[in-house]
Length: 151
Image 1 (cartoon, rainbow, N blue to C red):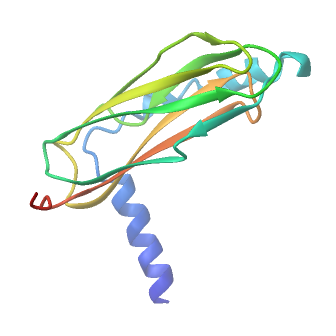
Image 2 (cartoon, helix red, strand yellow):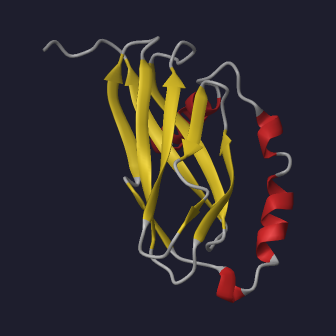
């Protein structure tokens, strides 16, 4: 019972940790996926993302989080990002390349304004869509708002 309650509270904290969630950005997600599913198998590639989750550690409310994810094209065809979506207006992200050749990499850089973060654990997500299975990946940025550790 305690475990179920903890999971429920965790989910609510993620959903309501930002006051400016922009759900309109996901309205056309299905149309992008539909177009990608029409690509022939020979046009799809395989990607690896590092880090799997970006940990921003403990931050103070109002700090700016800057970081990046590296996407490696491990397939035989060029990798192209068709869309990048942020779930929250506090996050800005961009790709270093529109198309990445096989055995090369690109980066997704992001900046997050934490003014509207709640105290405690916070998660922000970036969704990328492109010519790879399963057509989209969710990049996760985790942080804790609290007192910073003294240096």
